[in-house]
Length: 381
Image 1 (cartoon, rainbow, N blue to C red):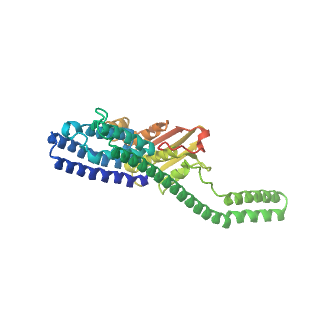
Image 2: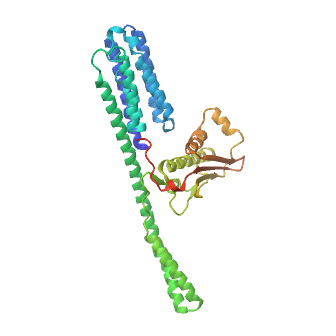
């Protein structure tokens, strides 16, 4: 989500500032037994800082593998402290200084309070080990750093979760407002044209009598039904859910035709967002390979147990083996943005294409009818 971007930028600034602080401490520490090894660790921290700033800025790369690697690098640098400092400075500030908090903040931003607390526990245990707390048990337990890590992980995770919820509600409000305005515009047009024609047919039919009276009666029934349809207002989807139809219709343009069911296609929010994102990636491929003015069609349907979104174009098609070759060359647009997203939802992707026959991508995700209108529990709490 867009509201997460400032959090990741804040974590990046924290990492850079903490790296400078760790280097300053090493310069001033002068008494470390192995300063060269200390500068090697600082170099590793600098390289990882640059890598994480880039990786966390790409939404597709954020996930458990990156978070696990971040924690392993952080703990590895932290555990090198005793070997670099030597026994005379045992228990002092670790070689990483405050830089070790970057992984805790990243876990909190991505996973919420519980993930932030878990990351703080891992880093704190490693920090206490470097201070020989578990070995000798001597001295007071250095709890200040541990408490600060837990506070940072939990508070940042909590605020990030609230920000995601606020963004979701804001987007929902924007969509409802836009839908309401469009509905009012259509209602005015219908009232000025269709409803008046139906009312006129009803009156004239009743006057003429005979078969015309029956037509007038039917016109009156349709007028009443249409007025009721215009009067109704769409209901807001339940918290944790989203209307896939609304998300897909956002792609509609002069070249993209979107066809969705007349009734709301309500799904768990993550399912709807990922399916819409996969459809968007498919449309991006149409523009990239067929041209900006190439027509495309998006269809969505629900058979009660499976939701299917189909993206079709009339471009040059995909030659046999082209996708496998692109994946081998590291171009993973289809593999990750489309197949990867749908696979994470437990669905399947079917592609039908050939030279000169266009391309049709069918993305199907099984969704139990009992959970379509049920709020999705936050997995990042």
